[in-house]
Length: 378
Ligand SMILES: *Cc1c(COP(=O)(O)O)cnc(C)c1O
Image 1 (cartoon, helix red, strand yellow):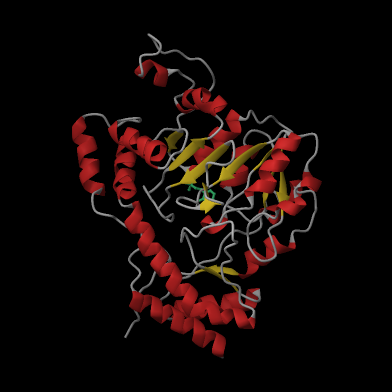
Image 2 (cartoon, protein in one colour; image 1 turned 135 degrees about the vertical axis):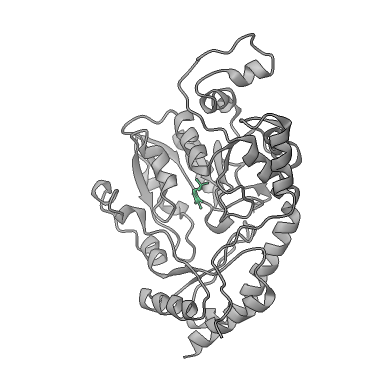
């Protein structure tokens, strides 16, 4: 008998996605900033308390907007972890920035703030902490450094919806933050993202950049009597069809999060014994919450991880690994300053992400846990 196929991810439909898309289509307006986009904006601003948000077509776009808003110029330096997705540096590289890659903690993939001060030069313009797995970076020392050296902080909150640092929402702490609604995240719209604007000096220009450099948003609010080309810009806004899908997810955020936390907790309880033999489990510091974005293990070696993935795949279970340290990537290695970043490399070699999606059943999860425990008993 072929064992049940257990993929790494499976996009979850909470119920009303196609109904709202149909509504958007029948409303006669499916370009950007329609009714569903407004509902999503209101949800984030009024229910969740963000100062100002703008939906974008991806987190990548939101990061690109952030790089434009803080006016990155060729030669500016931006500090970020080497263990992250390519979009984090790309947004700044597109504007000519030099990326200064920092290492992770030994015990968690997040950026270790203790090494940051030594990386700051007169050319440093921004720090981009990435809340890996939705678990907060230690933001107080990062914001402190930013104040002392007059730097911007842009949170890569792609994985960090519904998560907190000392009671403050992730994505509300830095000057700007970028969220993702890619189908692998907790709340999805296929592709999709959002810029959170916490420093309101950027609010007006963000609207202009997102609307091809025009003041069309002010025009629609009746603040100006015609709309003109007022700045450079691009098209960063999603169709209202995307927002309709997203709205159905946001309406069900509590249910989605409850189920994800249930799955996370079951992995944690079953796999905790592996810590005794030196396998790493997710670490949640006192200052952070868990938004159950992912569950990962940190194997003791690359060979062990390869064997573990092969073992699971033989049973039709499909874990994945990710993030080849960006300072050693074909594109950036020749531009990197040569510092060795051992913790980042360690996660590249040893971190494995287990199947994680709303519809993962307890029985399938028990099967995965049993395979893992058996693998480590051998
Ligand atoms: C998913 C992800 C992104 C990119 O998000 P998109 O919406 O696909 O552009 C960026 N950074 C991190 C850390 C991510 O996990």
